[in-house]
Image (cartoon, rainbow, N blue to C red; front, top):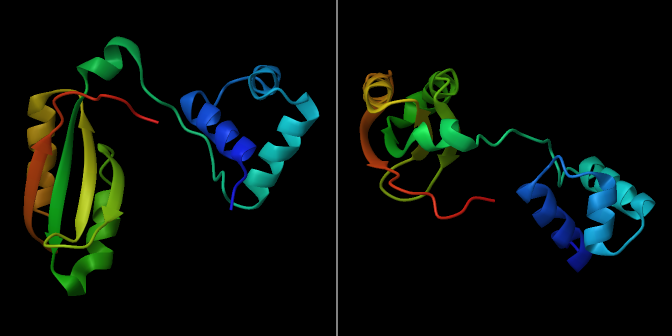
Amino acid sequence: MLGKQDQELLLRLRQNARSSISDLARALNVSRSTVQNRIAKLEASGVIRGYSVQLGGEFSTSQVEAHVSVKVFQKLTARTNTALERISQVSQLYSVSGEYDLIAIVQAQSLEELSAVLDEIGNLEGVERTNSAVVLETRFRR
């Protein structure tokens, strides 16, 4: 279990992973060395696996995102997962319970590109069917 300060540190890092140690220490009201040690422990224990880029500005708002539910023929699941990982517009892939087996988060630069990616996913060996929902607005993301 994570303590309250570790949870607050993670929240702040999720909001801006490039925050300086000094800024984090001030926000948490602890020393710089405490923040450095906590981050090191969170990384060593696997709680923090890595850091990533969040797109912003006009580029981010011009992106089209869709959540694509994917029904897979069970014997071809591994092959389908690998094929989906190779599609650069698929930013995340989740295995889920229910009628569909996977949810792929697809980010494209236009509706035309999104349509082409959806066709590519639907035509993958192992994909039985798909169902897509285009994101109209992101209310918040952490």
